[in-house]
Structures are given as C-alpha cells and as structure tokens.
Image (cartoon, rainbow, N blue to C red):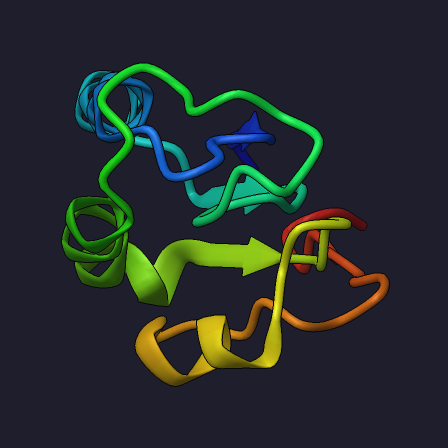
Length: 99
C-alpha cells in the first residue's frame, strides 16, 4: 500500500495545491492527513495564500482516498464542509494486502 502523509495545511491553498499535485504524480492508495486542515488557529500567522474554501474544493474530490484525524485547529464546522471524516482523535489504517 502506498501512502502520502501530510499535516498542517492550515487553509493554505498554495500548499494544498502542492499536495494535490503530489497525489497526481505519486498516485498513492491513501492520502493520510494528520490534522489542521482548514484553519490557522489563534496562535499562528496566516499561511501563504490562506483560502480555506479553495482547500475544501481541492480536497473533497479526493475524499474516497483520505484518512484523517483531528488536529488542534479543527472544529465541528469543518466536518460540515469536508466530504471525509476529519474529527477523529485517532484513526487506524490497515493494509489488507499483507499476509
């Protein structure tokens, strides 16, 4: 199983586009997101090209491949706009192809 792992997008359309480009190039079986997807949080500066709505539009088409867990900047409202589960405190990934 091929995994692509990312974290802390923080609503940056610039870095999310880089991630989507990597998904297109690498063609992973799963995209694993380790939280802090849409928002930057009160302690962080705005990231480059901060545009949460664009991040939503970039990630939702990949929903069937995404496994995610909640970061410290996620909120319940995030789940209302994302087509994949993002509020779990932890998640499990099992490779069913192994013996």
